[in-house]
Length: 89
Image (cartoon, helix red, strand yellow):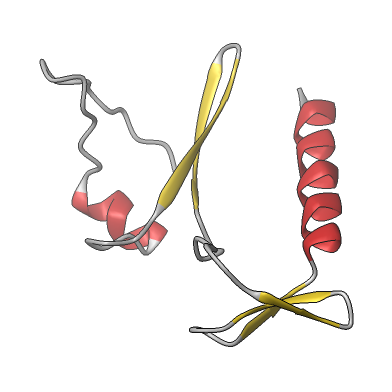
């Protein structure tokens, strides 16, 4: 899907309702803008913001949410995704 967005006087972009629905965005959902030279990609910020946690066998456990996360695997996956996107251009 392609959508044309307009920047208002305050420098803000309003996502059309159809795009928000397709994207699964609702108030309070965190999104991230990945910026390259000529492109901005808006992606869901799937991982919670981590302010504290404990390591169990090398895996970070977020205490409040109880989510286990392998930080090294997450970094590798993000690096691979960025390399894949760069190769597509």
